[in-house]
Image (tube, rainbow, N blue to C red; front, top):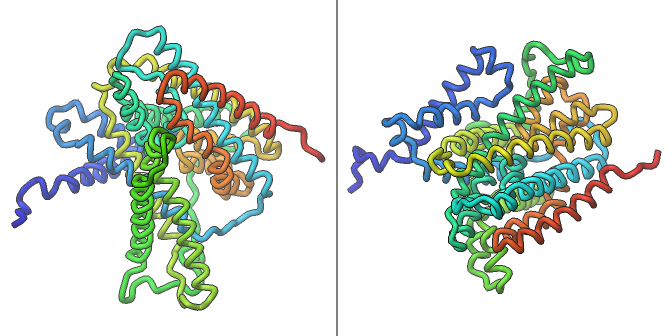
Length: 459
């Protein structure tokens, strides 16, 4: 018989207690301390850093379970993408299809640039630096941490650690990747704010001084024909059930692929990535389920609308907040003792090149709103889409420029452009030779993307 007085029955809940208490305290600090409020650091990152600072304390170090925090990070990433994919897309302002495709190309090419910069640092370090705790392909975690966030940094960090172990190396990939992700949030927020203030002093930007209240109408909360908020089943319960149903299909798909006989390529390259792509499968299956529901509605086999965009937005936001807190809290500084040099070099040089490249791309693609485009893209490509939106709101609070729509709609073309490159994440860590081949492929891909982005356009 289960004893609820046993702490093992509370293990997972205790970790969530730690996360939510840290979130509430961090939000209180951010709202009342001007320094943090002006920095635009997300409350979730501040909460994670708060836990990270308290972990060295004896009592608190035993309270935070690194393994559970990593699991929360992994699943929060997948569930958040599922919730976003289930939303019925509603475009508030017009933007051209070509501009969306070009924005997707900027995203994919920045990932390639970040990966290339990372490898140009870590490969020479591996060859010339006598450290058995270091992995030559670890530079590829830069686009996962900066461009994708804690979830993907953790997924591929664990995968890289297993490849390194198979080659006789001890590489704490999860801690290395999560540290890059946390650094990316800080850089995206602080560098973005500093550059924004520089432009404002030069008279190039007009930044709103005080937060404006958001005005919602009934259409923002629900659309015509939706199920009632509370009848035999609550509307929130329906949305959570749909998200979990899709995520269950994600598990079935990943488990099924794992059982297939895919030959040498599948065993060495594809299968190790399957479980790390939970966010990708969640996006694809979420879109599929949304399409099926839409077809059922059109054929009148389903009389009511079960998808509520507002609630799904809240679910996705909650998942990403938990992901950031848990991902940051899962970092173990003890595992980074021999990795500070490559970590600092990768994060610093990666930030400089990301800033320079995104600024050049936005100046070329968005001549009428280059700064709005830059802050939204730079925030996303060093943190998450939420960071991009936070920075954008400071100079375009009503989303009057197409920058917000470009940021949202570029996901599909960026995924199409970047998927072949993601396959290299399973190819490169197999050997040093594979990593060098990957660097050559990335150089060619970056040149191709640069030609597409900076090409001359017909008037």
